Amino acid sequence: MLFVPINAKRINFSEDEVNVIKLGVDLTKRSLYGFDKNIYNKYQSFSNIGGIDYNVHNQEFNDRALATAYESTGMDITKVPPKQAFRMQNFERSFFSVIEEVIDNVNSKNDIEEILTFADVRSLAEGDSMNIDIKATNAYFFYKVGRGKSFGNVQKYKSKNVVLTPSPAETTISFNRSDIIAGRVDWGREISRAVRGIRSGYLQDISQLVYSTTASPIGNKVIVTGGYSETDFRTQLQLVQALNGSSNTVIYGTNLSLAPIMPTNTNLQLGLGIEYMDKGYLATPFGYRAIELPQALKADNATLIIPNNYVIGMSLDVSKPISIGISGETRVETMIPEANASDDFVYTVKSDWDVKMAGQGRILIYRTA
Image (tube, rainbow, N blue to C red; front, top):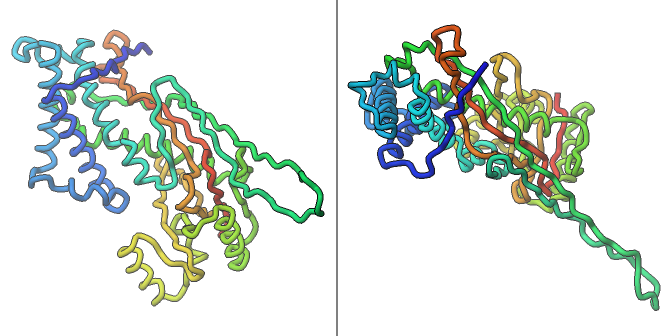
């Protein structure tokens, strides 16, 4: 398949383009909240912007994105209708540069770090990599020696190096061309699907790293794969807390993986439900807070991403154990009409990232079921 890149970003957007990008960001967050009110409850304020109907909001975004494309290309809609304009490379580039910016604004560093509280997001220029130097956390060991001895065994703790090297991931999407020309595409839904796909990609890579029962290259995992024992679990959490010098260690897991460590009494469970809604976490019977991770699915909408039989113990007051390197910006490429056998509009969304264990903090991976 032949593709024409349309990701030539303009460094400076006009005021109209900035306004339409904000309109698209609001529309996408509104769509995300409508998709799942529990997972995307932080976007609740976008659910009814000024009392405007969602379809009106979507149509306004489509119309203004078209208008900015016409303005930036110097074309007149009365002389070059959308049916012809969308076959011109510079028009497509202008239109989809708005879509690219909307995706990047919704998937901002702050948004991702707020969702993945244990991840540190690093922004890299396109094609770049990043070295992360992880300092040793060991204390120097003092031991008794006889008088008259000037020097003991030399201690030198070396740091470890982790390299973030983002690589591209992509998805190819098809629309009926007449739907785009007629303005019938639900851009809030389509952009939110792309955003959800990128975030699921991050989570899938993180899950493979964190929940893997093989040792981390930087040695910051404590892994327990045997049967669940409350005494042993407490012991391992205490170990992780001591290794991190932490007073703020929490337990992460899905609803199912947390179940074995929570009270089984119905009245206690009801009380915990109220506490979770009020505070955003649960207090376990042995003093540590538990935070539920919402389950996520791979693109097939059937395969679970997060294991239901392991929990993670992490300390919040040490460096984050995960680093996500995001390179460059989201790009959209479209298939040229001559290479397209059907009359569908085919385009590909690309984003570059890498995920590594790259923090000084130790984490616990504990099998509960």
